[in-house]
Image (tube, helix red, strand yellow):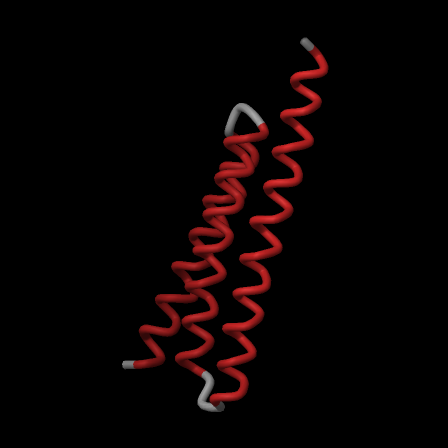
Length: 95
């Protein structure tokens, strides 16, 4: 049963990654693209991490997975903020 839940979580994560990638290609401006990528990738990675944690029995490896997920969330938020701020400044300088 745990294996089935883990596989479902991993495939759910892959679905979110795919939807974030489609959002990157289809959405009209940089701000909506950033929103789609940041949210979908964080949720996708959370589901994949959850699935891997269910499959892994070593607690130390599970802690490492959670730490990696938290670091990726922080990096995603910071990089999205920096890109959006740069785009906003470029947009204002065009006026």
